Image (cartoon, rainbow, N blue to C red; front, top):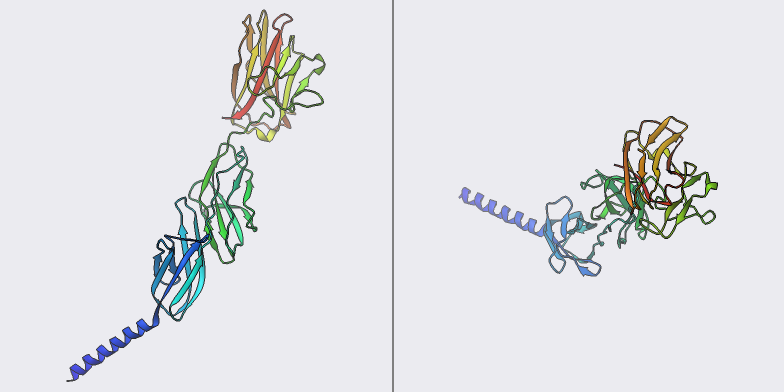
Length: 362
């Protein structure tokens, strides 16, 4: 008899416990939308609990067996391009909770970089539609493993319409990765896709194709002419390798004429290999002539002389490419000068053209 009574008591206690647990457990359900459209595949989760579910094609979700209490309901959506959006709202559960419309911000997408230069590029992205937007944070890294902990913060914008940024101080011939995070007062509202860009090599010679001309002198910008009174060097807009201009040398004799350009010393790195190149075209040679280029530094004992190119008794040429590689020595100068001249005898050649000077690291 006592055993039966004890069994009955345990059964009643168990029934009471189950009834109380059922009574104290509720549900949270709702519809998730973004840009007035249902969001399928979004994840709904509750802080402090292991409960989670996924929205269906109508954007509907339902979390069951939620005990009474105060929680943070988080809805997050990841996209195929790596971007994501999420939003967290406080909910108080005292009975079943129905959320008619949970508005999820639109994910921000980084566009392909624009205006890529050797030391800078331009980033742009679509604007956030989050009502509680606080700021964009732009991160940079040297690999695709990019998040807030691995990346370097390079830009913060507090206006939702401020959706572009010039990234500066980059290195030439380097690959960079970028990502934008959208923040509100409490944390992240989402993150963009990760994009990458590789900066091109830096061209150390300015106006090497002679396209920019000083209106007052008729001579190419950035270039200077030694012994300009001789007047043998001139812009030719009828003959060129590329573009519309080249430099023409008329009836050159001796070394009285020379074009040169100053190169900022910080652009040349000690022990770095460089390639100098340019194109030359000439009329028929009946005597002796030579091209000569050299790079030297003022206020220091530094000279890199490109081997002399001798041309004798040659027929008229089409454009020919001349290249020379060298290692920059570990010398600091106030500036460097790149010189070019053509030496010819009186009856040696009628005309020489040069175009597309280039000096780049390799």
